[in-house]
Length: 293
Image (cartoon, rainbow, N blue to C red; front, top):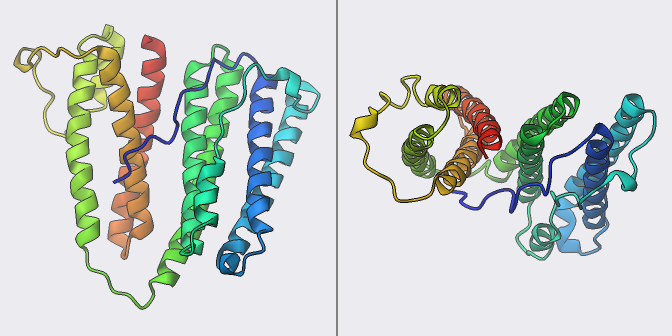
């Protein structure tokens, strides 16, 4: 089970205007294109099986950078500018992750696509943060579009990852134990997240409390506990929030990975439904957290 957060830290500050938002997006896309391009140009023969993956990824990011520039011109009449940046955009494609893959003798196309999926998942989380903290509606809407784009891209990349995974294992017939173990871990994590959200709701304003309880009161996790059945919690509420967000993020990753590994239609549909619900819940929790401090 993936335990480390996709983002090491939150964005430094709220994005103040559309120009700044597009400058951030442009910087991130250009950085990703450059780093993927360097791997596509690697000369080591052992890296040949995954070279074409990074060629495709580099081209995708170049096209993304061009699309961002066009959208910025349409929105504010000019291209993104470095002068619009107030802080260094978060690194969505860290060099250390790419180095780990490049330096491994066991690099595969599946591993390359999996890394690309992770990068777009990270982008989705980043833009949900930006949207949740935005003070202007126009910035929030643009950030939400960026998040939706990252989610859509992730789905396309997961399809490539799934094809690579099946190709590399076409002659292998692994049992269901790994999947069962992963889903068992997800069930435990859901239970822990359920408790965190309920604990969070106890100190939230009325409207936010109802919103939080709606995330756990749909019957899928059992009845909502009564307030007088809970014991005092010595930990700070901020820690409960951080832990809930981390667990919600982990669950989204688990369900998305499970969909990739599905060997039949029923398992695929179940995993996709769980992933969709988990992603929506994560976005809601991030928004509530940004409003409650």
